[in-house]
Length: 243
Image (cartoon, rainbow, N blue to C red; front, side, top):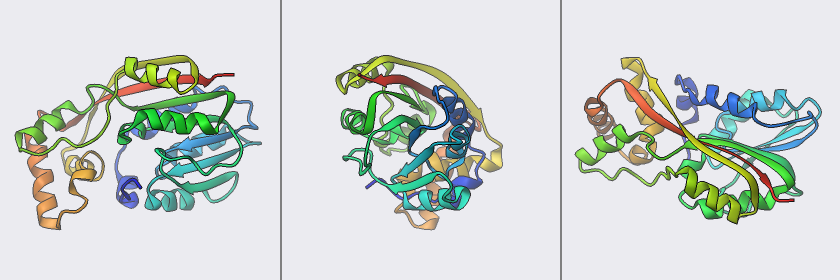
């Protein structure tokens, strides 16, 4: 299973992913009565915007982190939402095909995109929509450079190119595929930088560290960055399941 996040810490941070995710929700062509999978719902902030577009439909809020799911459950309640802890790299325990899939800030945490897209295609109806955004090629290069400078492994995040993503989606049975990159440089207040790095960008590095070691590691990364900012690059994905 994917790692379990500190959902409460994540929810307190000024995360730009919510704003970006709400824009991705707008890419879906919805009548309001669909069944939609939010693949990587986090604490449910973007899921709430998705549910607002489905007054007669329902949402499956899926995440690999039990803590994220519990935070989403507190935020959303159970009105037109089902909650599911599951690994997107495995067959998904969803009965019946969904009409659409939304995903924001999730796919780059998954190493095997070939298996990921096959898992999504298996639960999406013919003609169903996929709208997603995640970290893409060139994402957080300054953080990765700082880690290498410290002699640390940059980690196992998968920041894919549009070309590679298009090829894998088409092989998994998607058509009308559109993939593109755009930059989202994100300045942070100096007091927010280290908590942000710890909870989000470096979470997979520090999750097993003792408190003193963790704080020192995050501080060392932060001081090596050229600015109090995250150099995000987003990979945008729109596609349909082959009819």
